[in-house]
Image (cartoon, rainbow, N blue to C red; front, top):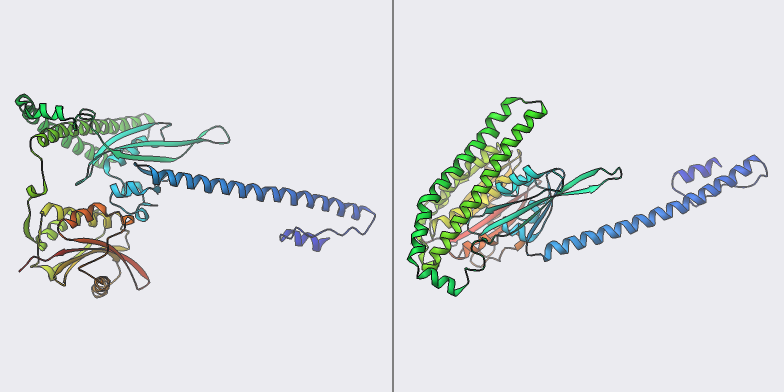
Length: 442
């Protein structure tokens, strides 16, 4: 009986206690066998229920994923620990980030400041839904809705599970339904009064509103960053007061931004009704690539300083290279890519920006490497990245998974390309964005 009991303890539920005696030991063996039979039945029921539960979870995950993929809106889920658990392709494209980069990243490294502020002010508040509006350079104005997700626990108490973020393209309520109406546009085109009103709005509201928003953001930044942390407040009432002040500033900034966007939209539509802006009106010029990259370097340097990291900047090989473009377009492209790298740097990594001429084209690599590598080792890795470019004149289009659709759209106007390459070296993997543009220096 001891041997059988040990076998059962190791997981062999097919063992049986020997019933060889018609006494207390035999009765005990019969009772043990009955108990074992009951346990085997319960165990089988548990295994089957676990399988059914697992199938239901898989089906729910599949339904949720199909919903996220089929909707026209951008959708992301945050877990209770502030990390992005899921994000769909639409939102990844809007934010110019890849799904792998966003997944398991902290929300403040993924979303714009407006959404982050909304998450901070809404998190943990039961059944609260908040909406904000934000804009992305070279894209549209978007709205974002943030909602908390709760469930009722076994004790009846509501448990916080996480948050859902939904993003969609904004349509101004003032202009909705009119911008495509021919009679409405015709009336605007023939109205001098509307022009006078537009000029009055610009002079009376636009500049003061911009100044007010700047003052509010500056004041809130000083309060949150320098004053509140030094107060050392411990009682609940004072802490609520501090939170209320911070939330009031946030509301004023959010509402002020929405008013400013409405004014901006009115002016943009009124202006476009008089003259259509086309690509020929965009300022195209020949610019030294070194000037563009140096300006980007100065602009992104604070991003790396905030991370206690550094950027190795080496563009000597392209110091006289010239690109024909709209300067602001190309500055946006490189700022976007360096910002991506800075968002996900950890203390063991550093960023690299290197430029080289290849087959009459300017190739710029932007990536991250191990901080312990020597300069010679880093240059070796960069050379390996350039070697991955098999056909510099006809490179393949980047996958949408990279989240570079908007960057690629800008570069295509100037016969440029962007791709993402992974390089393995010294037991480390590094990722590099490679941007190429025609060299216009004759």
